[in-house]
Length: 163
Length: 401
Figure 1 (cartoon, rainbow over the protein chains, first blue to last red):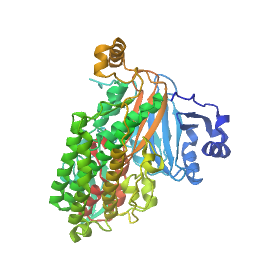
Figure 2: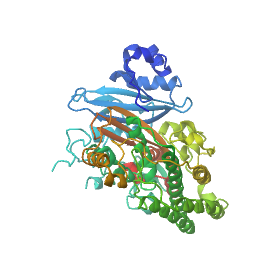
Figure 3: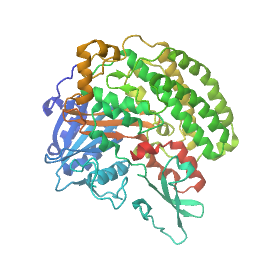
């Protein structure tokens, strides 16, 4: 089973309900889409992520937030890519919303008001990546002690830690 | 020492309430969970979980290892069902590689994953009942778990940290006599479940402690991220094995137990019913076990057989290459989710085209399930916290990672 090439042209993905819905809602918020290895990824503008989550939820296209996570592409800029994994139990379909964040201003609106389950996930990202979630009810370190220095999952943090 | 500072801060909001610290050294927190309780008499006004005592930075460690070296690390995430974690990780990498797995390996994976579900649920049942005060059930459950641990040892050489599923198939073909041992276990298991149920399901003391306690509605449960049997006990009929099948689960017939009440009792009934269903799936896997290879035909990814390595030059070269340089994985990202005994276990892996993953993230079910605990307990008694913790079946290893 060789890998099928990824579809990165948004024109070819327009017939997918989630892409179509987000485009109809705010075409300027959708920065791109990608279909690779049976997984749909939609790139969303940083300012619009909370509203995009709210929109997909209100339209009944997703009914569960599986996960919020991040990857650091240092030294590339924008270095962070947040990934929101949403699931529709009804339609048995997953979608990944991605937001790119630059290193100088690693902050994004919190989605806790839409999905309360994002609370711990966002705290974890704040703790380990140093990403600030604006409007989060309790943005404090969750894994590491309060007085820890640095954010270990950043690529410029050594694997052995600072000694 | 940071954790001994008065953080996370929880100030008593009213004069009459006080702060009680529960854990991290408390037998019924199932590990090192610390709960800060604001209490008014015996009633909980607010609760705040404090975690991170077992944080070892596994996700960071993964980034410094070859893909195949990550498998043993995944064992240590959820130590009650290591093979389910192996399964999720290797399937995610196989998805990245576009690798096809032979049917025998898939069926073996299903068989062992279901046995792991049984042994994980047995630990849950034993400790949950012990928290409530039924000591003997614990010993009964661990008796059966011991049989299962012997089966894992037989197949992988390890009782707990098995690392038996590898990228591209299994580490080894199962040894002689393995299937008979499994069959013996599955044949006598139903009457053991009856035995536990005799002790608990009709037990008035047990029912009184569980019924109506720590309720959560279906909408609240979905919003807070609850998955697995805890979610199904609130009336949401969703099981990844049935609804988004992976690893050949579409070939198996089983039902998904669902309850409506959403209390501790409903979660208990769901899990006990799951014990029977898992046994059903394992039995089907055993009876229909296909023959054939247990490793994919991908010499650059799967380690060659020992015998071939000693006689064939190419096999030796491939072995040397894989062990010293790993294998490159095409760039891309995947999120693969499976149904672990606790809920949705997902691995998010980003590859940059080299032999080491750029990012491995584990979406562990316990981490999300723990968020529901304050909602379940607020407004109830301290004694109910113990029942509630037991009912969401958390493993601190996968919470803290």
